[in-house]
Length: 351
Image (tube, rainbow, N blue to C red):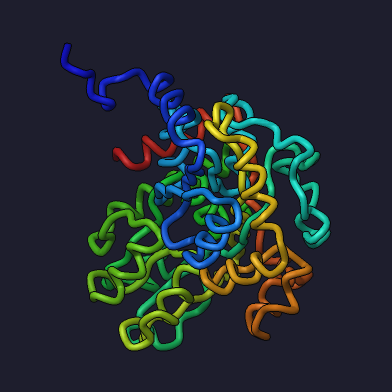
């Protein structure tokens, strides 16, 4: 009989085959360009395994993949903080248990977070902030405000993009601009934000939605002049190719923005959960955390890693009281709240 192609086998069976045949592999589902290849090589050599990486560009994409059976395909996933409760509620990730070493290296500000108060399901990996990337030749001295995107009088004709993916960040930006704070969850404030988003999408110079990395490249190519990105993504590209991205600059809007913590979690049906715990413990080592932050140009929550960073990244990684005044974690939503947000977002995009 002709063998059944792997692609046609039930996902659970495929996962079982993978576990049986590939005990020397760790399957990592990560953001693009977010793990130092040298760090991955070192883990592979120390534990005599191969790390197989797959990538996503938004939390929504990651979540959809896990819902579709990816929780049986991957050993470690890297969701942003506010998605951890959703993954727990959907039974897509498992408790980490007692096998994680190195939690004591974390700064107090990143222990027992609101999204995982008992540190049961996640470990913080890297953190950063959401802001506006812009062409400094087009906008030589912009006011550090969301108005560059949302106010047609401030930007009447220059092309701009908004961040794709989860609508919660989009609505958070609109809420912040309207004076309600990035972490707004009030129904009436969301309705007001949805109206602003709808009006913004109708403007002739709105070019569409773009993820963080695509937004940067669009500005570098002249497709757009302003967009939303994450701090580390721009820093990474400017360091890699200074000339290509020389005219791009970044600011955190004065009305407030997102402080995002990307975490390490283990899917509920991970093929190799023990190896996953070893990987997470490995990433918590101070020297490894420092190298990870230096590679990705994101900030580390690992206090023991700070002395190993260059002065600029060391200073940026220490979450100050002043930063806390302008930055908010994305609030966790569930049930009716989450359904309402999605409904408003769909209506705003369809008008």
